[in-house]
Length: 306
Ligand SMILES: [Cu+2]
Image 1 (cartoon, rainbow, N blue to C red):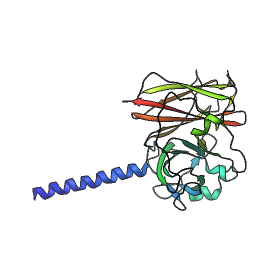
Image 2 (image 1 turned 135 degrees about the horizontal axis):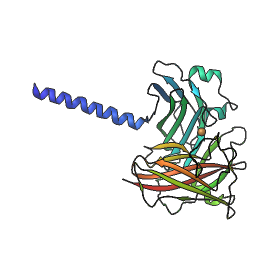
Image 3 (image 1 turned 135 degrees about the vertical axis):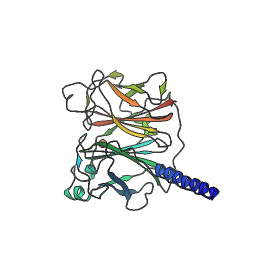
Image 4 (image 1 turned 90 degrees about the vertical axis):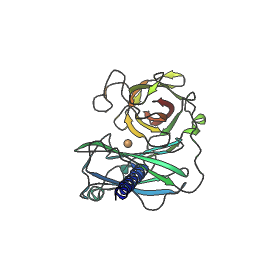
């Protein structure tokens, strides 16, 4: 009898452990203030490399009612998509595909459609950010994309740090920034250059300030524009995709990453990223800044120790 009880306890514990592990693998829920949210990522069909995938972010509460979203950083829903090789990033919004607005139908159904062409097969994370009356919430969805070509392994070379590319801002008919392949940057520069200054050692759990410094044609410049209501947008993504933070740059000597108060200020040549890396590992810090009519993507690798 004793033995049986013990066995069943162990059995239950192992089931719980499996559920827990599976839960984490499927979607890494780090909702901050919105414990009642019931969010999902739903694909129309299994996503395949090189083909436009159609999918929806479903934003409902536990009772199945649509969440009442508020605008933050000029959009209702933010989605940052990063590949496991840490080589491609996209930052898209349902508004980008819907003429710049969210329809009543989307609001009432709580379903926000997106589309994206995944450049390679393999694992991706979609980091979603929203704001409701309960505050900001964020959630990561991890999924596989089939087909070919396959992604490469993550290459870590912290010395090769200036990775910059100018792409047209949400240009053309689609009004969204496509996946940027960080490897292509050495050939497309437009004269932009960025460097990242970090503390000598970055420790997990400690808040650090990293600084991006911008130059164009060898000269620093301070005429960056706000991009989606912030001096810069950042995605901080860990190797393995178990951490994906979407955060915003701040101007040195101010505390605000939000647009309202800084319209009159110059932005650049330095922009700070205040961040606490939750765990040790290799991270890529993707950045987006706006200069004239171009979005400059930056990508830096950093190592975080325990
Ligand atoms: Cu966004």
